[in-house]
Image 1: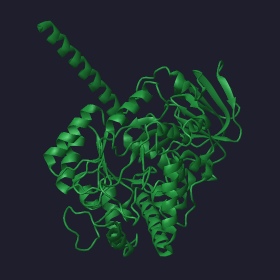
Image 2: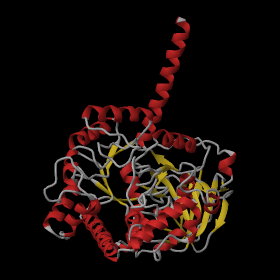
Image 3: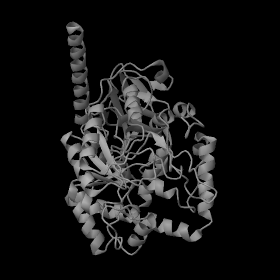
Image 4: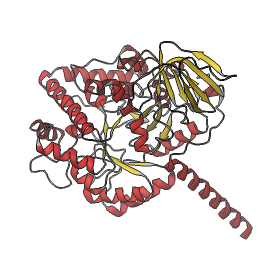
Length: 501
């Protein structure tokens, strides 16, 4: 019995040591050691040589620097070995891929992504949400493939309703069992009482949120997210506990305003303030989330150059609080905006497509509401532009929730297009969607730009996104750790599944 107990304790200690090492690697931004891809992954691999030369390509390096024309990008052993000028020969023994008219850019770093999706709005006949509330569906089979197919090579889950699923999916991707991007896993939503989501917890005590963050840190979560109804003292405790574990905490807030959260030490705020910051709601109550219409009305009265908004921007920048732009999820509610493309509709399950189109039809019955939402979207764009001009760190992500009109991967591409609509140049938008995310995650030395010595996480697109940002949709090859994947095959393997798998 004593010997068996000793062996059990030794095994537990070894397991804990392995977990500790894995967590240390993750928090330091170190890539997980590469594993040989499984037969399932190999279905989608088109380039898997140790030495590859991509010749005749245009390079957008992700730093915001001017485009480099007619270059050769050399990949060796999963890293970028060199970017050669026109006329320099590819290394001997390399697989040479001549790609005229193509652009090589960094893999996208999705900073508000999920392995879940709004499968159905689940409304009653009177368009009310019936008890027990708003459900989302885990799509851990289809989402990783679609993200990778779109050029997302690193993503943060930014809120989870099935954190064990997300952790296991990350593990299987890292082990080469299934295809997908590198994943920074966020723990379960840190939510207060009164949430419309029955899949979320309800925490109203600082001690409880500390236990929750501590537990999920040891389980492998590397980020945390606070949600709309969290009390201020609980948010502060969550931030402290996350920082204690070397993790960052972001928030989609409401009961706590942006300025208060910044002073509590939050690292990141999701969506931007026009739809979520309650600071300017008249007579709002402490730790109570006002209605969305109240928040919208409070921001309708403000201009971006007003003293109140400029003061907020200054404080966020001074306290180094990043903002995540999620323009696609707001655009999906604007009835005058384009509906999803046929290609995107084909990716959706019948129920998900029906639900989303029904929501669009319902929204179209109120032109005044559509005009109001369009104005709010434009104001959010203006805020993000002003935030960056003031020195703020803007991140990018699509948020595939809302009314189901944002799909994994497709939404990441659309985010870049909307950033250009917001006034950023294409090169600035690409930097926001690549290098800025890598910087926030502490991995800019490894990913986020096309530079010698960095991981070969790259996207090859047909066209020139520096002139036509919509060319980011023309993805032909996605390199992750130097292995090239076929986006068409990845998407074909999950067509019709979004919302079910």
